[in-house]
Amino acid sequence: MKKLLLLILSVMLFTACNQESRYTQESSEIETYKKVLKAYEDQDWGSFATHYADTAIIANNVTLDKGQSLAELVETNKQDATLFSSWRYVDTESDYEMVVTDEGETWVNFWGLWQGEMKSDGKTYDIPAHITAQFKDGKIIKEYGYWDISKLLVNPNNVVIIDSLYKAFGKGEIPKVLELMDPEIVWYEAEGNAYADGNPYIGPEAVLNGVFARVGAEHEYFNLQDIELNQMTGNKVLARLRYDAKVKKTGKTFNAQVAHLWTLKDGKISGFQQYVDTKKLRDATSN
Image 1 (cartoon, rainbow, N blue to C red):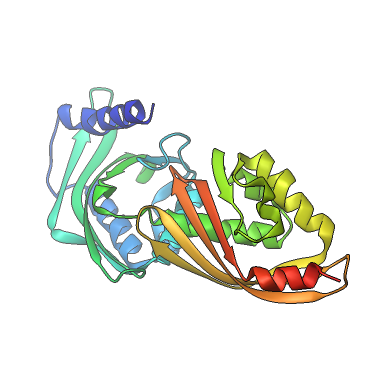
Image 2: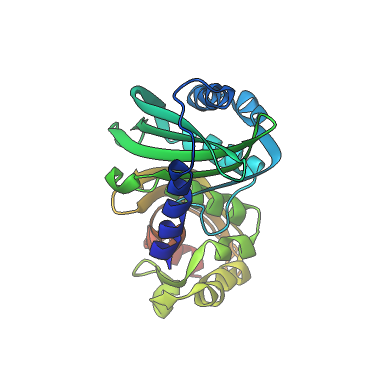
């Protein structure tokens, strides 16, 4: 299905290129799109948004299934920016063209080389990009983009997803936590942890009933502290944190060192492995 969607996107991207007129750096629409990319590079999101209609439809090879609103696009770009030390489009590798279709639609096509230095590994990645945008009354009303992210060893959105999971968990928004999980998620509690009796938990419902419900029922409070997220290769995210909790049965508290290894696939969490100081957990539950 994903391959079919990408094929559809490719057709949408390149259909405009085979219409009528081609211009190079002469139209007001091209000049506007240069401003869009400049604002993106500068992370000037206020200026960036002014070039889009409020009802603009945006899609790319990551968001093709549902597309994005302008507000969602800006928020996604803000989140992505936190993962990179720097990013820009390399001008010498860029090309623009304006196309007017037989139906009178005005499109701008952009081909370029996106370059970003990822904070997690310090590496610089060169990503070929093709974006096509439809203009009306000087504003972008539709935009489709394709970035060849095959050179990236990881999906930069992975850390964002795991960060949102911890924030939702901290607010007690368990339904949001479960929504981030793949339907076939494989969840392992650390060996020696009482909750490891159900390993592996398969699917969000099993995690909810076998882990989350028991944690909630058996603790007066259970907080996650000092969370540090580390981007890993193979679409994995390593979280280092601490559990700060109080056991109802014994009245004892504990503050334990923890590591979580998350695995993601297509924007969903497909695997979890817990590592924890199980002695502290056992001591707190023992009379």
